[in-house]
Length: 84
Image (cartoon, rainbow, N blue to C red):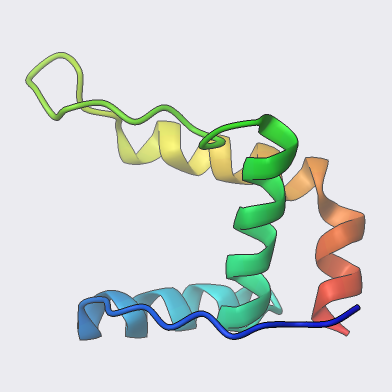
């Protein structure tokens, strides 16, 4: 499979936090982004709800964690392949 680079600019602290999280999950940044992109394509959209933040509309950290855990479990085989 041919690969192509993607260049993005993000907050340095966010990058460090994400790298630590992905490392704890056995992934590197490239694999984690690939997992997200595959999940988005499979879902045919962003694989979690995105809303304008408001008092009653903000998505809780727990909800994001549950959604992330469900996506990780659903795509576990793909993640293991990508991690190799």
